[in-house]
Length: 291
Ligand code: AMP
Ligand code: MG
Image 1 (cartoon, rainbow, N blue to C red):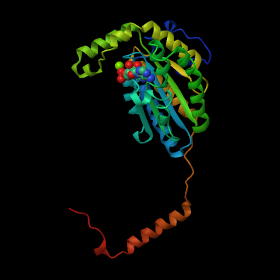
Image 2: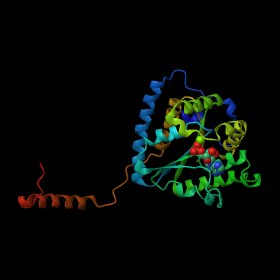
Image 3: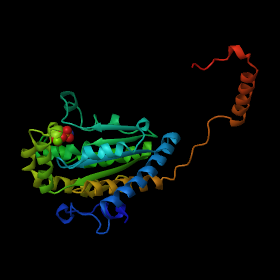
Image 4: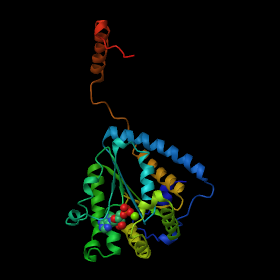
C-alpha cells in the first residue's frame, strides 16, 4: 500500500481527525511483516542519505507533532537509528526561553533548518506556536492567526532557497491510548521521568487541540511541505508508514553519486608514484608492526 497517498492531507482539504482511525493497520499486515518491510525502507533511506550528504544539494526536514505521549520521542529514536549521525540533526522545541520569547516565533527555529546535504528532525516545531499557543491564548488571536501564512512562506522559502524537502507527520493516537501510555509511564520506573505536571491538565483540552490541529492541516499542508496523518496507536505500524513515506520521498529525488571534484587521472598518478616510493624506501626505515 502507498502510505504517501493514503495518509497525505491534500492541500486545502478539510480533515476531520474523528474520521481517521488511530488504531488502523492493514488487515493482512502482521507486526513481523511490518518490521521486515520497515527494515527494507531503512536500508533505502540510508543509501539515499549518503548520496544526499555527498551531493550537498538537497536537504530533508522531518517535522513531528502529536498529542502528549503520541510517540514523538520513539519516532525520533527510530528515525535516528536509520540516519547517519554525521548528516543529521535533531532539535526538540520546548516552552520558549525568556530570550526566545522576546523574538518572533520563527527566530528560534530557522537556525535549525537543515543545510544542503543534511537531514533535520524537529521534535515539536514552529507549529506549537499555532497549537499550544492557540489553545491557551498565550498570545492574542490577532498575532497567532497570521502565523499560518508566515509558516507557509517560511517553508516555501526553505524549499526554494535550500532545496529543503519537508515532511510533516502528525502521530495520531486515541485519547484511550494516551491514558494507556500515561499508565505505563507511571508503572515503569525507567519511564517515570517522562511524566509532566501538565499531562492531565492538557488532556482536558483534547478537543481544543483537535480543533487547532485541524486548522493546521487545512491551512499548512502544501505540495512542497505536506502533512501526513499517521495512525499511531500501533507503534510498529507508525514506524512502517513513516519509513515508507520517507524512503519513497527520498528515492524520488533520484540523487546520483556526485562527480569527483578532482582530476582522477592526476591523483591516480600520484598514487602510483607514492606506491613506488614506498617500495624503494630502505627497509630499516619502514615502521615495523609491533608484536
Ligand atoms: P515535551 O515535548 O514533553 O518535552 O514538552 C515540551 C513542552 O513545551 C510541551 O508542553 C509544549 O507544548 C511546550 N512548548 C513547545 N513549544 C512551545 C511554544 N512555542 N510555546 C509554548 N509552549 C511550547
Ligand atoms: Mg510531554
